[in-house]
Length: 70
Image 1: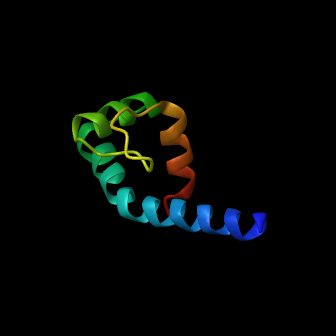
Image 2: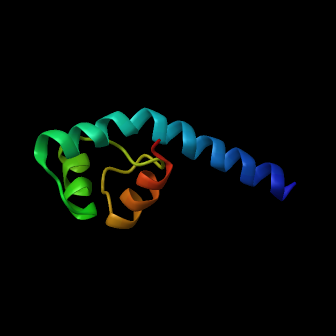
């Protein structure tokens, strides 16, 4: 059962990254954000929710998201 659960979690994370990826790219391109914290602050200011529905972003969350963005 845990393999199936892990697969579902990964699929959800990939889907979220596909949805939010263009926003992150836009932030980097338009604002010149250089650090993960800069990107996190920009996501917060745009009101983008984390995968769990929170509005507070951390650099570690952005790093994980960036790994999934294609």
